[in-house]
Image (cartoon, rainbow, N blue to C red; front, side):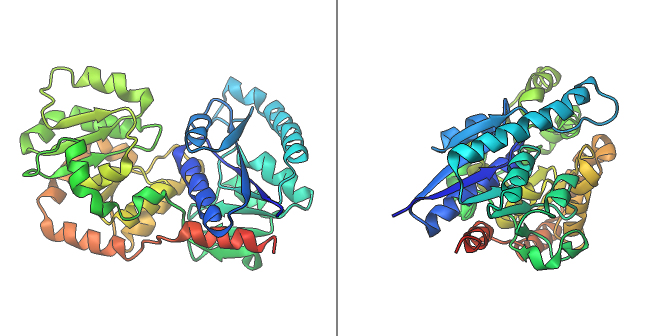
Length: 366
């Protein structure tokens, strides 16, 4: 029996990598005889995460455009041309039956080359406001999987299918792991637990807001599980070096995020599309601090879509230092609001998005 060959391309951050892995596993549930090849960006986290899950990956010499004048942008045209050339070689050698893009600058060369060669191709748009890359690729691909209902403003309606955003398998059903999570993170069960995450790469504003108010948090008596991201851990530890860290756990990267979610009572997070998809499935009260350093300010739009449904609180990035911890304390003291937020966000959850996208993708080659 001929084995199906699938390329999944995307990366740069966990928000593009984890959905790609979830999609691969969903396709494997539908089709047993599948060979996967992942394509990402050289020197980014996918080059470690994907092999750890047992899949092969090739890295492209590619990066996104930097904001404003930046010398690194001078290399951008050369990187694009080189990546398109390499994408052609990858497709020629691997001979895929299907190509899927999960976003990030690494996905563009593969999707473009595959679509131009008539290979069935699909992109997955995670945000409520798509970036320029997917808006361009939409002209070439056969199908576009989206997470929001009103995306025909950006994409051809006949190509679109609303699927939701795929999330990691271990996140689904993580509420059953609360005791394991409390044990893993050594939390005091008599105190509320707050989880602080700034995405897989960390978030300077959130880290600063927590660090500068660490005494205030310590005084109210909570457990704090704090993912700083690699870039900020040393800075955070410098700021809080003289604080008794009883009840405060600081991590560069939390590998068992399902258990961290389970242990938490309240979560502070950036507003990336995949983070929001996971948080909806978790169903805990959340405070979102959208990153302003993203294309088209899409994180703010993602967050606002939840706020409009009374499913989250929002603190703007520029106000985080003075408002984030105070808003957290208010939420900790308002049990009714916690219940209301939790109830509302659970109604938005889509737990089978990966399977929906897998079916849509496989339909292209039937």
